[in-house]
Image 1 (spheres, rainbow, N blue to C red):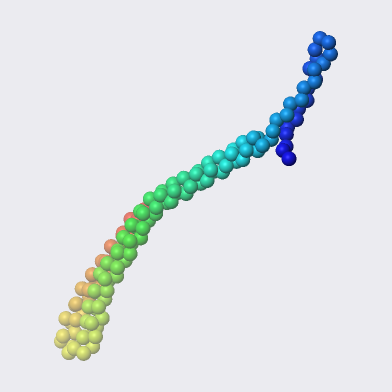
Image 2 (tube, rainbow, N blue to C red; image 1 turned 180 degrees about the horizontal axis):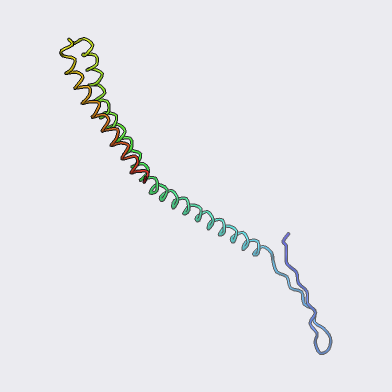
Length: 137
């Protein structure tokens, strides 16, 4: 069974009226609606796909500098730790040697410890200066 759109009309004429019945099959309208829905769905799918590709590409571009900064920060922390560990090792070994040394040799170890302590203090001050410059203060 087919569905139809039906329209009737009464048209006045000189001698009376003419009646008209118009039948329009709904199959083609359903087909047109189905095709229109598919076109809208396809357009929406393509738009979402384009938006996803666009956001993936530009998110990668935005994250790249953050990754570079994180890598640089990690390298800086490793270098700073190494630079601070060296004077600390000299100070600790100087203290250990000073405990076992003769009183005459202890002044030599004290001067080495003082020199390395000053070096460590300068490194820490430089790091604080960098931190203040980075914080715009």
